[in-house]
Amino acid sequence: MVNVRGTDLAAGGLAGRNFGSITTNYITGKVSGNENVGGLVGSNPGNLSNCYSTCMVSGTGARVGGLVGSGGGSKSFWDIETSGQTTSAGGTGLTTAEMMDPEMLGLNGLANNPNWILDAYSDYPHLACEGTIGDIIPWPVIHWLDGNGTVESPYEIVTVGQLSRLSRGGALSDRHFILVNDLDLSGLSWSQAVIPYFTGCFDGNGFMLHHFHIQGTNDMGLIGHLGRDAIITNIGLKDVSIEGTDNVGSLVGRNNGTISNSYSTGTITGEEDVGGLVGSNGMWDLDCGHVTHCYSTATISGTERAVGGLVGFNFGNVSQCYSTGKVNGSRQGGGIIGSGWTSYVTDCFWDIETSGQTISDGGTGKTTVEMQIASTFLEASWDFVDETANGTKDIWWILEGQSYPRLWWQYDLAFSPYPQNGAIDVIQPIILNWLRGGSGLYHEVYFGEDEEAVANATTKSKGIYRGQLPVEVTTYDLGKLELYKTYYWRIDEVNEADLNNFWKGNIWSFTTSNFLVVDNIEGYNERIFDFWIDGWGTPTNGSTVSILGDIDPYFNPDLWGFNVPGVHGGEWSMAYF
Image (cartoon, rainbow, N blue to C red):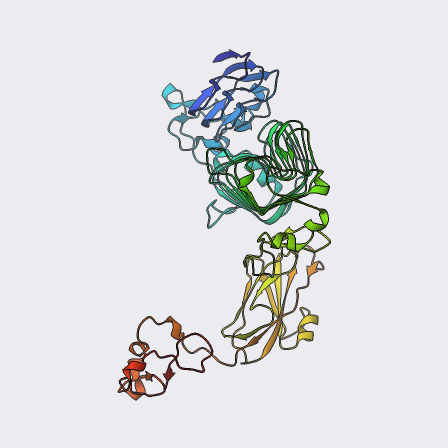
């Protein structure tokens, strides 16, 4: 038990400041000080894991936390009742009862660790070397999430309750997750990041989290601190409210990982390192912190340095992003980047009119009109739906003159068809392929020979309506088609929550070739004859092949593999019988 009283800039039960690594420790007692005060560590730029604190903690200044005052910490926790603190710059806050619950302790890093034992529901966990009564804490059964937390089978987040429970399970921070619904978090409020520390993969899958509120100190956002190998992609944050001190962003407070294809709207307020999407991005001495294909329309306010429309302070890489929100920064305010290395910001833009900012540490300022014209972004190599000059991934789309660019998964209609619309000489077999619209939960396929009939078809149109496919299936096998004929097709995106609310697809067409491919001659790396010799000398046993129509393969060996004129494509061909 300790009794620590600090008067300087950092005070902690175990360490005032930690630049090293602290693991497998706990602390009890009292800790008080000015600012950067924590039950275990006051200021923690280093590593902290598998620790806990039950200390009573108090401070007269900023950055006071139950476990850590400022910095971070993973797979660790503190007692929110005995500490008197509901926030911390790292770890998870638990009640006294939860601090004795093997499931909650397992979810926060102590599972299957022989250094820790627990007398379940009777006492806090103890170090095994203390010789107290108890057992090793087992790994909890994750019965409340479908999936296995792997790349192949990520944990599925379906309900608000699952997300809330995940926020109190630090041991799952390195797993893979996928969002499978929009989640309305109205009425919920957090005093620290929803997920304080994360090193896994979170795929928003084109869905949104909206109307949530966070009010705390540092490392504020949906994710407080995103580790170097972590990935967040395809997620929207709508109408959020985030308030903090430093490292404050809607999606990530402090980012050392990779963020892509995501956006935010709402209000973000802090002191320093405040951004619409990310508070601070990257570290000056490490290649980390990547933000690409993202945007923010959030309103940003900061009273100190590094306040930006997308990123507050930047030492990482930011590419093909934009921001439009109002930026209120008394010091180092920037349209898209508040402060940082300008050379690491590429092909990015901000609206100089709506932001109220004419400067930024990176990016290019444009007028509202310019920000709503595709050419502004195409000239910077942005990949848009249905254009191929900048790539075929179809990351962005835009309603010119009406809105700013949006991400592909916000596009309601199915798009990027294969075969491409109007394609001719399409060789069979043909399997239709497309990219799904963002709001649909399943697809309805229409196909036929008459353009008007396909355009007007409904689910009752026999022969044209080909059925319904789940959202993850974006292919349809057509089987055998006639040669040299034009066909039409359409994909509707349907939201099963409202069957009358569907997005009728565009009409696409293609024309089949007037030939069939018998064999891929280009695929042979050796003499074709060596593979087709079966029938030589035994006419009933198969085929015979040679060059220029002569069935004797030895008739003119100089012509083996010769390019026969009049073929449909490629460089090589052969005569066959």
